[in-house]
Image (tube, rainbow, N blue to C red; front, side, top):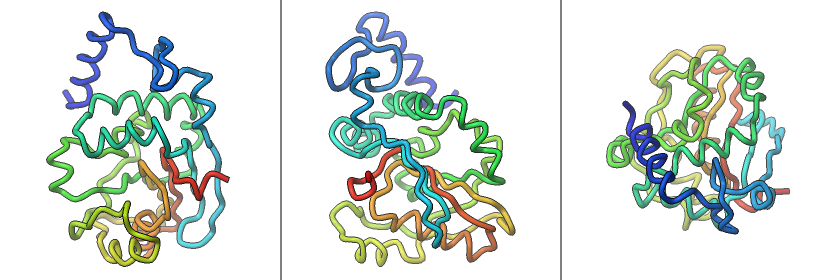
Length: 219
């Protein structure tokens, strides 16, 4: 059984004692992180046609306040129990549309973190958030060639320099339509570098699906 599934089962047992509450208003909820009213503040749910290295970007939530807190807890505080709640939030936004979305792609590829970070956490964040996609098309295609420094304190140019050449392709992507999965899209430096690497290896085109997005991508 996956670590996240164990945590999920434990959380369900705990919620029999202490029902889940909306992270904003505190109202009782049955799924996700937010009640329907509070969720509306965070939802972006838009498609951006970029047409350069990345063809299209799908963005679901604003990366701010409670969304930021939960993702930070998952990535840096080892609170993997929140992963299934983020997955439920992604599922709420997509509804049944994800099945139609997947038909457009040959490969669904999560942007990987370093091996050490992945082993410490016991999970890859984008894979877990978008687990409901079932990964019937999922392949281990990308690897990190080296560890990169945290990007949140760097500007766009510094981020691009930091991630340059950090990925390598480990499977055949020739003429493949690829959907890249990410948890946070801010300047796009990491996603662009991953897409550039895939295109150089022969991918037909690359789109990105990100759970959350920095403020400069909201409008």
